[in-house]
Amino acid sequence: MTTFDEREQAFEAKFAHDQEVEFKAHARRDRLLGLWAAERMGLSPESAEQYAAVLVRADVGRSGEDDVARKVIQDLAASNVAVPEAVLHQKMDELLAQAREQIRSGL
Image 1 (cartoon, rainbow, N blue to C red):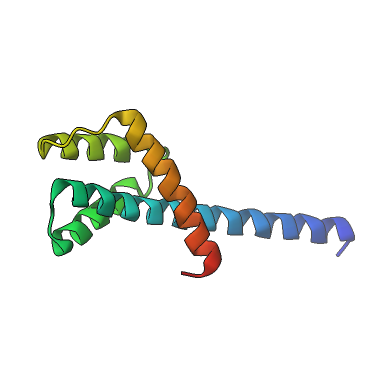
Image 2: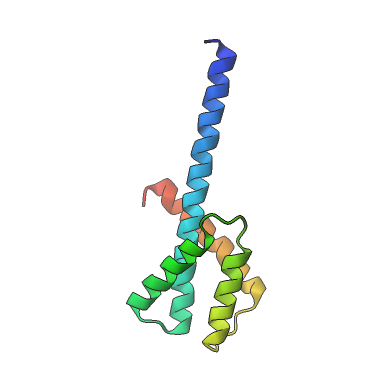
């Protein structure tokens, strides 16, 4: 095997690893977002965990985060909790950074 082939394989392995980590970070972000939203809706801890799991399942297999944001905004509105879309997206960005850090830290 040539050095070029070895580099190519290493690059492909790193890319696959990075994609897996990013997938996990988005799933964790969605869970954290679900818990954050559930707290604002006044859900019990058990219901909050269930709601967070629903959000994770809603985002798996879909590209983008608009579906999750739309669902959270609708659910918050149904509970008479007003959260502007810009605020929600900012919170999603914060939680994604937190999720990435948790994964890097092995939490």
